[in-house]
Amino acid sequence: VGFMSKLEALVARLEKVAASLEKVSFRTTSRGGGGDDDDDEGGADAPAVREYEELLEGPLVTFLRASQALGEADVAKQAGHLEEAFHGQREIVRIAATSKKPSGPEFQKLLEKHASAPFKAVQAARDSRSKCAKHLSAVYEGVGVLNWVCIDPAPVPFMNDLIPSAQFHTNKILVEFRKTDPKHVEWVTAFIELLKALTDYVKRNHKTGLTWNPKGGNALEATAAPPPPGPPPPPGPPPPPVGGPPPPSAAAADEGSKMAAVFSELNKGLEITSGLRKVTSDMKTKNRPAEERVSVVTAKSSPAPTTTKAAAVATAPKKEPFFDLDGTKWRCEYVQGRRDLVVEETNLKQALYVFRCENCVIQVKGKINKISVDNCKKVAVVFDSVVSSCEGINSTSLQFQVKDQCPQFVLDKCSGSTIYLSATALNAEIVTSKSSESNVTIPGKTERDDPVEMAVPEQFITSVRNGKLHTNTSGHV
Image (cartoon, rainbow, N blue to C red):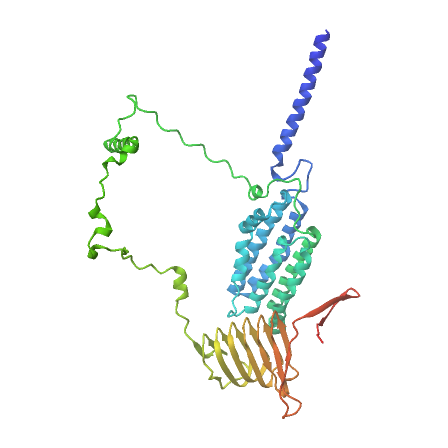
């Protein structure tokens, strides 16, 4: 009886151990999504993932509708790329909710798979010659906020610093369309609200950087759902014939005999050199006649190398210069070395657009609406009056000289620019963004005095006072 009772107790203990092992096995198997059974913070139902999907269904959809309402193909195309970039980042947020934090190279692979291509497509859609160039530039600057997933430990200040770069272009859109076309105003509102909604989302869910699941699995393995089961495997090969395998072919037999001859030669050892001819003294170069002594081996003539794609691009002909009136816009494009360009017979509806020009001087007679110089080098524009603004974009060594009136000058990503103001244009505003080495020259106090040249400040001091930022230029004694 005692033996049976001990046996029953041992069986009961074994059953408990088996149950425990089954439970551990079940929990390990179900951890493929990145957490234990009692971890309800991982997976697609995680609060961070659900809230990001609300962002996609709310502000992002509003912005896409506003982009379609403008009726401009290039704006709608760029908005589509931006939508792909947001959905790619949604996948990264989902992976983070179900996975442990990966290493740097592994995280780079995730970005390349889900975010890099649409991000680059958004930036590539920028076109300064487009009718909606300001819209494309605003999205080009604003899409940088999606890089918050790479910022650790404070992504929110990084995003707040990028939004004003986008607002620099949206403010121009508001000035141009506020009273004429409300669709553009709605587009600006939707885009800025989208950027701010993403910033608020990061502030609530990823304040110190992208939040990963410490109990999750491998991030690279969680990049995609498991594929559905495939079709059954194909049937195996047919059985061999009853009479055994067929005899080898004549070609196979010949190949085998050649290999056997090679191995037999190798097995001779030192005797393998017995069949070599001996070099006699008359065969040596020093003993041969002078006319037969040749020390230079001529190379065989090889065909000319084919032109590579990079070389073809480098040697591609430049585009044809163009300088003429196109509708209400004077276009000066791809012109080089011309210092006698003159724009005459102007009116208030016309504008001047200068693109990819180098070492040119342009004179504008009369009053026009606007002047824009884009991607140029060593270009000078001398004009009488401008109604709205005179701006330089992505250019170097620009010179603007106003003879009468110009309310505003804008320098965006320019270096080495000089603005010459007349006595009647001293009230002009000068707006600079990401520009360096900018100077302003004004007339002297009297006609006999030399002009005065002043540098536009590039260094600033910002401090916090009463909960607000105060910025002043940095001066040196």
